[in-house]
View 1: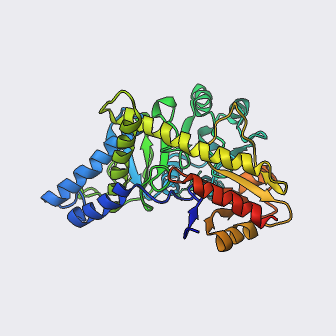
View 2: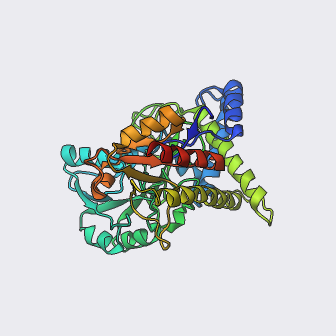
Length: 402
Ligand SMILES: Cc1ncc(COP(=O)(O)O)c(C=O)c1O
């Protein structure tokens, strides 16, 4: 038996590609200085690495505007907080959904309770999809924005972002997208009507923890909600208006950005290796890599889903309908056994890492009737999952249920 069989990639992808570890270590040793502050050669070179990462991420997400509008934060939670606080004022209305993670639910609930922001929560259908009609119905005269959970971190369903964004645009409503479960796996293109794209570094983008970001479209101005040093215009009493400094206060994570930088190059190299017609275009190579990764991961999840569907005591959450799109994450319950117990037994007896509970997304579990039982067992294979790992997972579940 191996030390670990890792099926918790929805929480964070692990392991990372080798060049990510290598470049983080190397760059932190050679350029672990405060970027953009001091003006000496090392600081300028560190700043250049950061700017080149902004440029690569802009291309990765189909953003043709100023790369300085790719803003670094700590993670998706931080980005969503910055976006929501930068946009919503007392009396404004926002549309969210039951698919949303606490990274959306909690800031919005605080703003509802503490600031008088009005909130509508859309319910998904039995497959987990938000109906396009319900989006239009949810919008009022006061609606400022809609948050789209691009893919659920519990049931893996992918929303029709283009269609939702089109309805929002017809009503003059801004579209904030939470790509925590899709960045690096599916194409997410700013041109699809996205106004604010939020991402986290440590999941499908294969960076480390502690780095995330957002892309703010050029038609959108977010007010700063954090204030402090930016390394420029220090005489000013207030936060600069220009991006990225408007939204980036304080020192950003050099190791974190270095990790994302190396991961972007890894995506491009992977794409180049699978593309028949070779190109040096970063966006095209990364797109090919994403398709390859998504295909690999969904082959894994299909095998797991199909097997679990045939196990008597197992109930899978949601569906895998042909007409819908899914990421590799899936969740299940076992008749007569709490999810936590199943996860603990898999860990203790079989060294299998899964996540049980509500997965920071309590409303999804309410929608699917799994909240009261304490949630479900989530299985999320990744790009580096091996076929033998899946065999071990499935055999272990079968054995534990005998
Ligand atoms: C859909 C979704 N949104 C937001 C987040 C928050 O990501 P982070 O913890 O990196 O801020 C997660 C993490 O699990 C997620 O799955």
